[in-house]
Image (cartoon, rainbow, N blue to C red; front, side, top):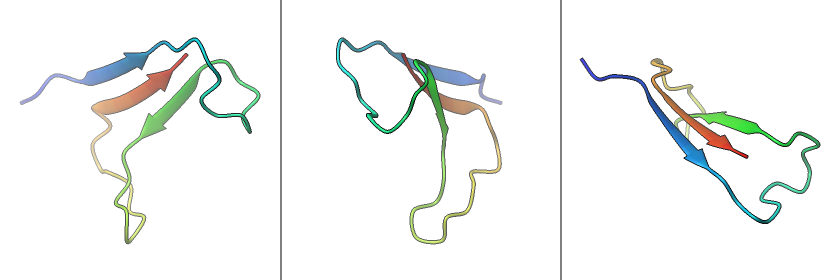
Length: 47
């Protein structure tokens, strides 16, 4: 069993210009079939 993992990236520039929020959270998705990764232990957080 793996423990949940959160990647926290703090930038000094705007990564996602189309988003109005300061904090963006991303989950994993399969690239070709767009299937969500069934376990939500990995999340990317951009501040």
